[in-house]
Length: 364
Image (cartoon, rainbow, N blue to C red):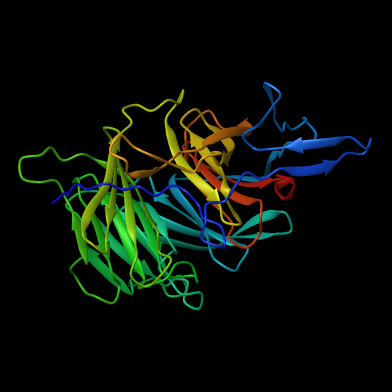
């Protein structure tokens, strides 16, 4: 069932618990000019000074390695603490496939190919420990499986999670990221969003589904958040009609919701991935085969009062740092390396997987 409540928390606090104030960064250039930089611009004498990058200072997105595959690839994920990654998809004969690759001497080496009965749509390492590094996957039949890639014949955990295809998956509580129990969230074409604890067999620990008589919308994306202690945890879900819902797992309530209709982008946004080393930088993957690299910029005023006098967060803005077109087909998946800043992989529906390098991230 969906519940409704109000959610107001977009601001970020400083170490002293107060809202962080405006910061002006002083930079001495090579020609000894004093430049005052502010991400959103500082009003000065009726105008504003805004920091801009020259073409030489901008980050570049470089396709380092690319490899053609003999199947449709839906997702790819880095194996934590390694130069390896997995790709997931389906063969033309209707079976699923997981391939394990390693970067060796500037090329990709296939280490293992695992074929399964059903096509595999999505995967995550997010609920696994760094010692085990188990891969959780969702398939076209609605099954949630957890695999030991060293012994992949039989899953270490298996449940019929949904009535239809699992479109999206996310994990938390593993890899030393996020507090609390290791959990997996899945979103499906059947309209439900379910949270699973691999230590509990068969039944989800939370089930978010439409109320009786409400239309079931295809869930396209899910993500965990707010896991900064043992108790707090939320799940954000996006649906095919533009609905975005934020579920509070502690109180089992719908914390916030909105509808963005078709959004405001020229093509479908297939993926959004934030840089693990800097949450203010993120890549979006487009339906036109393009990647866009963005920077989130905090507002000068982090919060304000609404018409009823209740404090609410103020959304910031984003600036485009770089973009590149890699394919004539949609980029279906995207993942940053958690260990090497600027290293990235993506897959596209032209049956290609690409290893990317994003440069100059330390200068942004």
